[in-house]
Length: 492
Image (cartoon, rainbow, N blue to C red; front, top):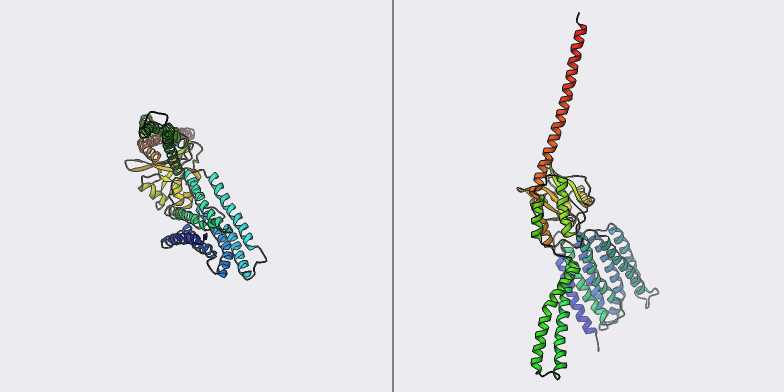
């Protein structure tokens, strides 16, 4: 049975899919570097998919021969572009080096292929050379992703690397299948590549990516539900067949009895299994209302900034397992600039303050928006990337995951800065809502603590001024006494 019609159909479907993705990015305005690289990748993907289709024996031998020679070169160009795109996506410093080295190798391979195009077979096993080069570049790509995934400390950055790793799997699989000698599997490589291309386009066109671990957890729950349901249904069917001749019940009555028993077992078993999955994968839950009530009662009498920072952050640590955090207190500079002074309450935090310029997009973001500001957003949002380098470097050096505005009577008085959760996952909406409410409750206490610290500073300055005045008065008295003694001695 000929398989080339199926391969042609698969190739046409995959080609239309690649073309659709290419057009979607082509007509986007103000394309970023990642989108431009993705456009190049999808364009090469169209050429590669065409070459894979033309290898089929239905086409003239000369066309199939040319496509077979060029397909390994196009696969090499694909994996090189994918490596460069990955470096751009993960903001790896040696992007230009990867582009230069990979581009040079691809050009050499293309020129050699064109030079020996008339030789059958070519004096150099170019196909095997191309396959070996592809394997090396693919290994470098996967190693880069694995290293980034292990080294990423912030949850959203780790989620970004995990997302790109899952994107790489179908892309690499599709490229690898196209290098096979023949068969239906080689034709399905374009479909695998199309699936990866869809995920790729989603990744380069949006900086907010889905929580991969949460999605995998949902799939696991669905799989467990499927397994439990299948086992119980299978038990009903097999039980009805086994006991229909042994029990004084009709087949229908026996099926009804077994179905009722299965239904009674199903619900508690599924609920227990779901709690077990949540405990193993999502951690223990918490009651936000009770924690916030206890927290509100605790901070009511706190007037010391250091004590307030410790109380706030230890409350968060007990609930979410955070191991690093600080209060960033807003200090009035008498100008339009805003100074943020870190007060460490948990872990090691830099105490170096920063002044945000009035035109800073980061300052505009925290002044105008009550939503949490994530470090991931600072690095990936096109608007926030325009902030001054020292502002972004200062936030990066803090190594915090999220910053929550603290306001009093509508005015920004500080930020609650928190590191990653103990689970290593991004903050979900439930945790974010809890932290936002906690930051709101902290506003009054922080304002009182700031006023109290200001009064203490003012009293300290007044005391110092009094000491200076007293010392000056004593010096003046000594001068007066010396003057009197001099006049007494000098008078006849």
